[in-house]
Image (cartoon, rainbow, N blue to C red; front, side):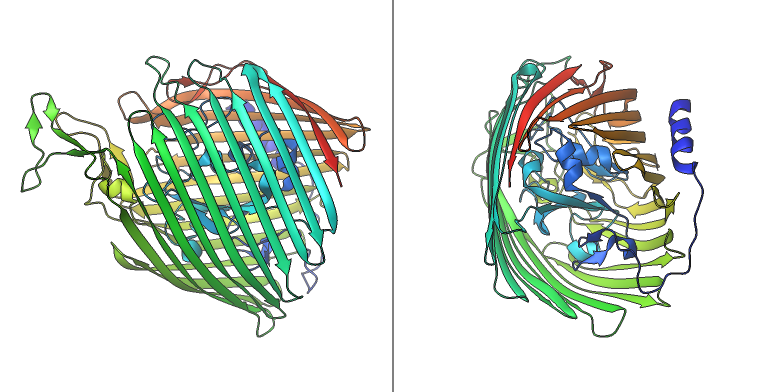
Length: 633
């Protein structure tokens, strides 16, 4: 802890503050984001806390999976892993996304979007982490905190919006990568972009495979993606995309037990959008469809679908004012068999057997189950006195099972100077239970109530030393009710999802970037979370530091991660600390041999730490990767 606190003190508070004149109309916008408002707005002017993982951040990593990069570089976010690559699904799976202590198991409280389209398995209600490929990504925008006003269900804890690549310049652009490393890990990537006379296309093909660092931990995936667009004129454009991913994964099981099941998964998505962009008028109509088939060696076989429609329109009628109105509809569901249910009598009481409750295993219950959401919302942002931005909005959410709910949000961004900004917001999070939590095998419970919470946050952004240092500090308090958790088995009843009553998470998030000279960059983040109700996949303290140095044809990168008091599910099914303290050190060296050819080598866990992120699933020791990158413009 002393090491962690010293690093924070030196990094955040070194330097002097340079104040300038009060802001005028020429505020430096830096990053422009869409996730917090649906229409493009300067990130500095959004009251919500929005982080951006850039394409450069992703390129620096040799990860083909996207989520590990996000987990390192965004404060308040933690994503579980179980091996060198591959997350899997079902029992023993990793890839749980946690934002400020909220995520669920599996993840149902954080919504993953691709180009603004919700992505989750219809009957289970959670994302599929292995389907998100880094090569397809232009950048990722993360809302840390509720975004239910814009995205409705599953956005209670936050949103991760994966914004895919598009070809911006005329011509052809090619990029290939081959990687080989420890445990016979192989990664192959090919992507190509094309643009001419308003028509653009981008496509990629990835194949990853590994034997894994433990017995029965092999993994392989093949992913294909294509995105096309046509600019009809300066004001209208049409875009369509298609993605397919097929992967096989093995659950190595806990170290003290036996190997789990194998899974064979097919996931796909397609979308069509029509976008308009006039002076003072901007919006879109988007249609999307997600589908999947899951086969597990324990006999489970499921199919699921998600249909969605999104319409929104932003208006800039008077100076400094933006009004956004929108409508969303989602219809999702699926079927699976065999279904395991607990036998109950006519009064709903569990029927006991000689060794506990009696279960019914039946394929006759393989019927389609569905749920729908509709939402209408309005969002207003107004600039006052040139340096104060306020916004407020209201959503009316309509659920086919739980009825209707109002979801409000309000906030401000105040620019004291070009270097100094303050933000604050109050937002409501809302999530009805998933179909799985209600109906599908123990621990299902059809008496569950929707989760609700109010999030309060206040942030300070500061540029120091002639803008060579940028810091962001955010404090937050999440007060909620009806949190859904799995209550451990107490004979004779089986484990069951239940609403646990009130909960509170509070903490602080700090992020910083330091560029002393153009070829030397440092960045990092720190998060502290205190939880009234301890939640899995949540570290109490997390710290990440990264340094990047360019010299002639070489680029050197060093990264460090320190996790303290990581909570998880122990062997008794209770939430407890499963890892007290681990410190990871990694490095990467990239050599630009030719204009179009790069060679790299990387190493992770250089200190050979013995640690776990999932209980009783030890992570790899020292591991190495090397490969080549070919880029042709």
